[in-house]
Length: 275
Image (cartoon, rainbow, N blue to C red; front, side, top):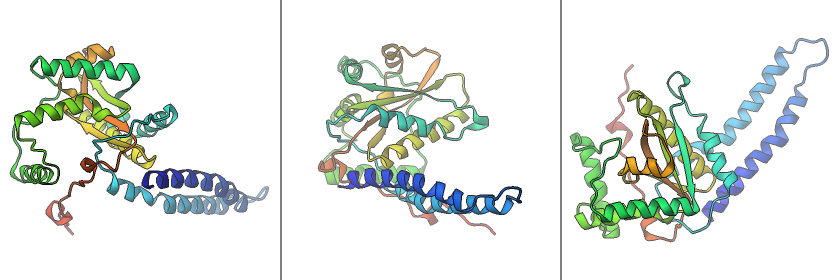
């Protein structure tokens, strides 16, 4: 019901804008040989106000997005997947450098990649991601992580501190939680660390666009464990840096694993006001 509601709201928003925008422009059109400043300002004001009112749902989109780890088997129409990339390409980047490249996987190619990754894990091959996993955290961040792991263990029985559970978690990641689609994000390996921030903005835009369309995602670090092999499988140049994998599909909200909503620190804990 939640997914269908978001789909309906999205269609209504687009249709409402397409109907009202011409009316607003017509109402405030400029008569021949008259100063158009007032009419243009009015048109822009009312158009912006309408969009602003409808777009306020963006705040809820940001707040209600969550990582999903159980999907339905229903495939996402290609047009909807294209819309995600079309939206994400408008993400900001340093000097408009746009340091991102995306590959969307479905069907046999996704299955081929998953089989290869699970096989490498079974062989005991050492992982070698292009971005090394953190080996330690500052106290505040470690506190958040510890709380997450404890809460997840309490609610699901999954203890990610246990070696056997880590293997199980990696297998789930390599199968992209059995979502019908997966997305990999790359960028040129010669780029500075600043460009990691840019591709992070791209990933966030992509996930929010998916959520707004009633789709679900989960960003996956484990999916980058075997970066060299992933790039070879997908025909990506070794000069590229593998940044992130994501699962994409329709959420299975009946699954207990999707019931847990992670918490966030209170604003006062990380924001300071100076006047």
